[in-house]
Amino acid sequence: MNARHLPFGIAVKDLVGQGGRSLLGCHIMNDESVVFGISQKQHAQRCAAYWVCGLGIFTVWPLSVVCGAFIGRFIPDVSAIGLDAVFPAILIALIFPALRQRRTRIPATLGTVLSVIATPFVPAGIPVLFSLLGLLSWRERKNAD
Image (cartoon, rainbow, N blue to C red; front, side):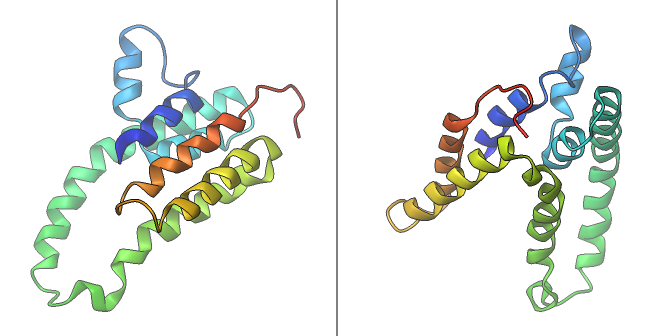
């Protein structure tokens, strides 16, 4: 599952910092900090969004888990209220701005198609790894949009 951090690292290589700072920059890398970071137009805004989101999640996540575990004791059937669909829905909403760029849309589409094709033939959890093959279509281009 964490193989997604390989393309994440490639996408945010200019945002994580250098030297000792890069260790923390890589540590706070998560789905949300990557999406917020790469969705900004200016480099300074990209860095700020990446670090604010990453550090925010780094500090708030553990507290939220503890609160959720406590509150969860009072909810007899969490699947009945659809909490399992919230996180994927948020991630899909966050990636839509990035899909406006052809440079992002092509690898994302290819990765999606490969994952869907692989689904009937491989064990659960593996098709998402096939989506990484979409990165083979990634090209560094100036003015690709």
